[in-house]
Length: 104
Image (tube, rainbow, N blue to C red):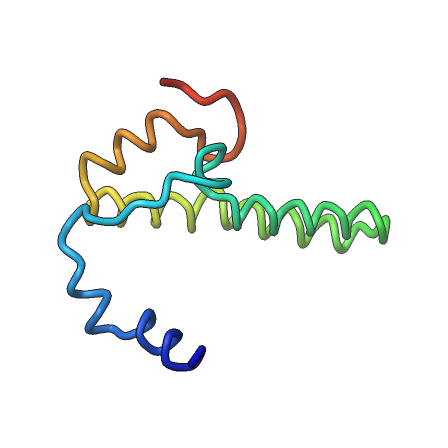
C-alpha cells in the first residue's frame, strides 16, 4: 500500500494537475524558516565541523553553504514566485529565509 501512495504522490501527471497557487506549506517548521531542510542540513555540516575539527570539513561546509545560499535558494524562490505568485510573495515577506523574527 505504501508503494501505491508513493507512486500516486510522485506522478508527473498529478503534479501538473495542480492549478497555479493552490498549494503552499506554511505550517510546522515552514512558519519559522522558508528553508528548514537546507537549514537542518547546514546544522549537520556545522556539527561535523565541530566534531572533526577539520579545516577540510570547514571548507566543505562553506562551499555547500555558499552554493545553497547564493545559487540554489534564489533559483528556487524565483521558480516559486513564477509558479505560485502573490501567495508566495506574501509568505516570503512574512517568514525569514533562514531564521529570525517573523513579521506580520
